[in-house]
Image (cartoon, rainbow, N blue to C red; front, side, top):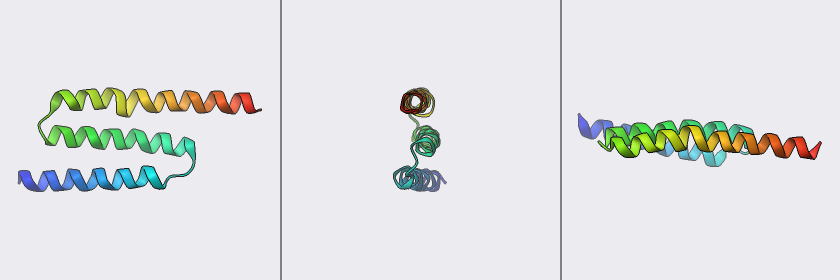
Length: 80
């Protein structure tokens, strides 16, 4: 049962990483990156690393996408 959870989590992370790479629009890429951060958090929880999962949740699925979205908004505002 545990091995099946590991495999499922790893497959989800692999699919999420592929989705991030294949997304070309920067705004959509930031949102997909946020989902990828949640998938990594799930992987770390399955691998019994709650401290790493908490860090990934804060940085990978909240802070980094927020910084990217603010940066995109500032760049679009300056280009107008």
